[in-house]
Length: 261
Figure 1 (tube, rainbow, N blue to C red):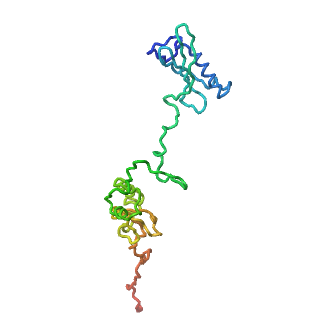
Figure 2: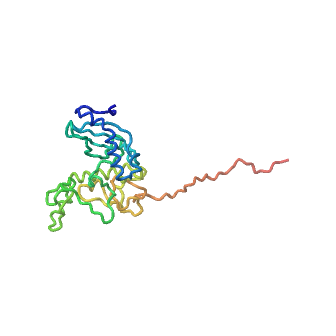
Figure 3: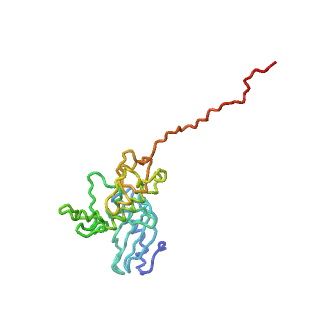
């Protein structure tokens, strides 16, 4: 009886499709090399399918039942050189099945790095043709960059591009020190009117600054001018008592005159 799920599309010889036990024995022998003879037989499970690899080759798949290989399968490729040639084992490998537990797709390191990953001593070079940077000798639409460029010998090799500035501005605006933060919504006034704000230079001056109030949770951080906290420079101390005190009440409805007898 031919094995279940045999694939006859490439018309391999029937003796290749029927050689299930030969394929199983090859898988057990391969498993024994890693697991030992006693555990090898139990590592090769039921026959799953026979897949035609060509007119003279068939791969038999068996369930892999050893621990740690859920959904994997043993693939044993059998081949023959002709009608009178013997059936031989060409390859025995472990391959993942459709429900196998496999490692996630490999992602280049430059795509895996996230803000906050950089540690002490780590180096993170900017990628070539980084859209956030342009050569410092190019004309810029940022006045602060132009001021630096005219200072001979003090210019930077690379400066932020318009794309780089827009990207940073969007990230800061949407971040924890932007106008949508809970702290900002509860603040008495925005950072743009605070005396502790150090405005950024150049085209970002009107939208961002650095907090210089050591008592603020944003001290030393870039803040949106619409951000705010309870340490705003214009906050006035509350001199009223937090406890409500009732006014002193005089009861003048009592008759203190003696009552005649």
